[in-house]
Amino acid sequence: MSAAEIIQELSKLTADERSAVRQRLRELEGQDEVQCLNDSTLATMQELDKREAEDDRQARPSRLKKFFSAWDASHSVTVGEKPSRQRTYADNSRLR
Image (tube, rainbow, N blue to C red):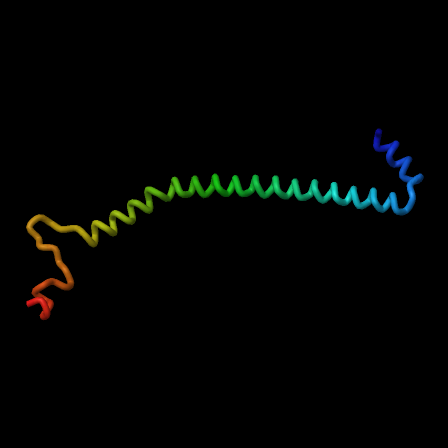
């Protein structure tokens, strides 16, 4: 049945039947809108995931470099140098 035939037959329907048709059309439009929103949301989230993954790949070397430079600065010991500690046995009166 074509759309033109359906439209032509609508005038023969009772008020209750037309109401039922309107309700069904609203349901179908709502399903289409929900599906469209779901598809759009999924595409947006996938794009965000790709961007975050790319940002992580680019930022990782920089984060590792910062971490290891900070680690080296606070943990480096030259040969023959005794590591410095804030609390050694000699400084603790309870352990003497």
